[in-house]
Length: 179
Image (cartoon, rainbow, N blue to C red; front, side, top):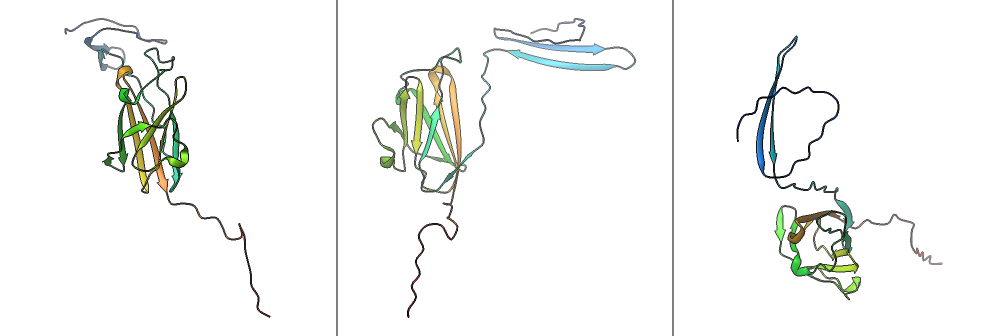
């Protein structure tokens, strides 16, 4: 690393594309009616993908969670195909506590057979995957699925809330009057 002195004209749009593993520290001083000094540290290396974690989905208790998982190759556009359970790492959290549920194959297992205590993985069609699980407690659940071969992680969050009750007047009513 070293210091680099340069004068730069700032204006318009700018972007930087850089590859490699280098670290630069740039400093600039702008002189005019007022003195402004700024500093920028730029570390260039392996580009880490920006991951977006959507807000928690609301799930009623005693309901199956079924969600899709997208995994891609290095280009970020081509879907990974034939991803096996052994290619993945699972971390499951209830609140701030890690829950030790295994990731198992869900191929051929109907939704009515999904039980609590496991996370089920299946490839729906070529490159399209799903997970299923049956939460056994109320609270905030977070599924963190890591695909090390392609340096990807998928985070899914669920807020399991009590079953909603239907308002009175819906369903079947009966009344008995003695005469």
